[in-house]
Length: 216
Length: 216
Image (cartoon, rainbow over all chains, first blue to last red; front, side, top):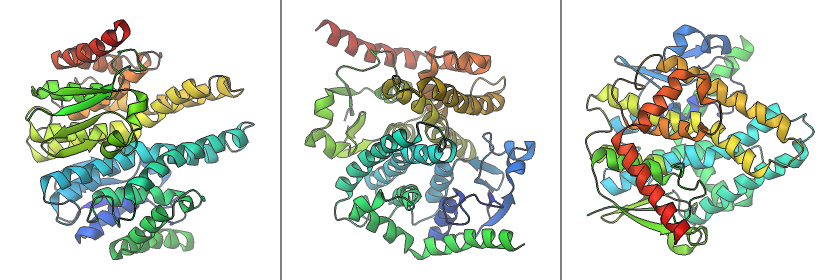
């Protein structure tokens, strides 16, 4: 049975690949699994039908054969566990790839989201100009550590994995800042991820939704 | 081979179970796996030997049979995957338990940590009194959704799982606030988690480290 995911009918990022369905689309493209998409408005995301799938009223969700999942990391992991291509077979390498998934979501993404959140909701507050550099320094701290670990390697632990998919997906949020460019190896890492054919197909698919909405 | 984890020699929470080694200790106690602990000072956490294990220079880490992991979520998942007791065997229930692990770490914990971070680093800033209620409302928003989903159930998805361990571990960070008490079912959920013998053993073990350091 073809899985169904949910996505924004009108993504706030204007189709630039930052909405979280992008990571799920990308994972499905990496493993060559077709999928259907159900588009939701912000109002529909908060209705009982969607809250039954996603208790926090967000996207994406994933439905397949009586299984309903939410939370991007869990969905990508489920895809990676059930198809070849996103997790190494060797047990130790597999555990390390999973470690990078969690590191992307629990160590790297929170300060990056915090900066986005502050720019969105606190931009006009009197403290914005003093606080933004503090937030950026928190991100720099994490980027510096990641840059050292990556070094000259192409991916975080030998071959591309769900850990790289998740980490690159998180770092892509920084493209509109200059923070990523302070570490050329991280900028190259993200560019390498974006160049993957599976990424390109996923990006085109989510952009097509936004373009259709805009013109519709 | 008995695994070795790392923990603070002098935990900033004064042994109240909030340092992240607690979640790993708890998981190991739930599955009945003995473990060794290597204690680290803040200075040692930033030294090359530890950075080789943990690129972000934090605790906990996990070492076993040539495998080295960092990131609490990944370590708890590794323990849950290799021992009975923390993940259901039925595939759909297993995927849902993993979903709650990710939800705890990527949806629930970030606003809670942000509040802690602000109280620690921005308490004396002129914006502190205006911003703290904003942070608390972000947490309330998430707690409200979680409370609705939990309802009158004991655990998030039938039997206790690694998803509950992680969620309760995150919610415990709110015990020093009044936020948890606004949802009696969540307060009871956390109390139910704390009452588990495995939690109690893990709590006693990490408190003993702090007590020994304090008296030593």
